[in-house]
Length: 108
Image (cartoon, rainbow, N blue to C red; front, side, top):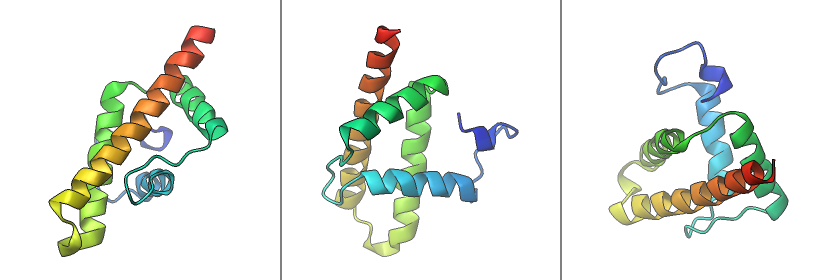
């Protein structure tokens, strides 16, 4: 799924490159749970994810890593409501990327 994890069978919890990817995802999510991504960025994301062979289960793995990272970073301040908001925001972003992937695939 991630080129920097191609030589491993499991996803290391503290992989700095995976954490850097999570930071990029964080930047695309607004703290109120809204996806904040420019159309050109979304088209690029769809294209890259399609090119890299990302499939639905990959999005779930990243979602779980994102939610664990949020919980770890926030500690006791991370409520169920906060976690649900991040999950919802991620789901919206993942859906938008998947829709762009379908659009790119159908245009080929």
